Length: 510
Image (tube, rainbow, N blue to C red; front, side, top):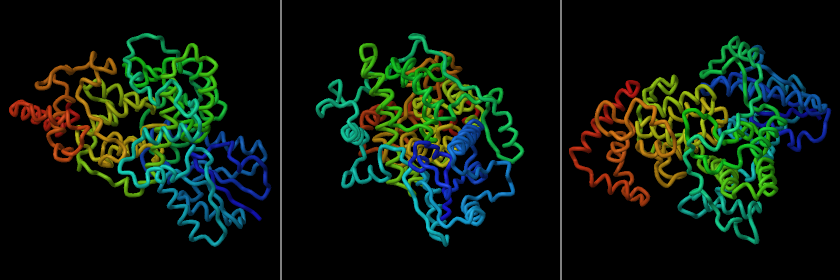
């Protein structure tokens, strides 16, 4: 019986049980289609990375003896919507059964369920065999609880999977070394040159242009520096262990004008495309740590494990617990438009110029740049979360909706009203200056709140607190900030708010 199996672009797990045996009655379908390039405007590096990874994956499967029908973006005579493409290939292959792996995006999950309900042949769905958790495990874990605290979920995961545990207790005597992960990088220790893969994708860029695929951002010399094969992901993981892990935890929140990647692993695209699993990465890192524990502090490793085992799995769980309603939440009622400089990087605010400029150049920024610079400004400027979501989903190479929307609409924009974060992550210039050197080269003065050279973050911060104070009346974590707001001189506060209104009305002037 002929079976058609669909492989989506973020399901590139060559260790999946599907591929362990060759079955001549199974045909795999992979496709580059306009539906997936146009549901949001994507960065050029994101599209090329996914297409290159997909093509490499198809080549690997074919070399193993599997039958793969691969549709490139240039084959415009094929249907460009997923359901119609499946109908076409079911007929073409004379398939009597259709199988797929559970998508990690709600829209695709819904589309494939509807397709299966309407098709006349048998269908079956399989787990992607990628995550530590099952889709609704977090929902079950928090059943009956008022707050979805990540730390309690993280501790459960450590215990369940016996990661960094000794006799039922956390290694090092504490669960979380976050307080040790907040150092400012000041030029030392030296940062190793990033491991790049330097693949010429000029032919693929031409294919995208000829196929009418609209992208943004840049790709220097048409050279892609991201891993797009399993072997490259393994190499990048090993590079992280040998060169970066020793200082990762200390500087994971740091920002610097001359260093784009610092000690970050750059493995997020590798994981989110499923080229390599979170378990393989964590196991590799822990093996290296246990072999070199005399030179690597536990805080460096725990900070890395927490991001993957804790935060990444937590965000996926929140996504499936809260969708589809989550994508429409706007609890703070923010409705302003995204500034034009988000697409150009042209602003006099140096922190935004650097963080957004890097995002447009590299399709990457680390979590503090995304949260406390770019997201911080968007929230203080009260931009509509729909616009913020679309930008984040498009610009970052690792952005798949399940991980993007929970981080953006939840953690960054507090549009979910506190499902993910217990307070909004807003700050004045103080925090940005504390964690990086952006302020030293800025047109604006971080210490000034009013005047032409005053840092816009300062007035925007106080205006945000004043405008949203009713919403946060019962939020204990906001108590200190709201008390400071109460103590503000009314005249000074009004001057700050007037300055903020000027910025919000015309952010591209700043």
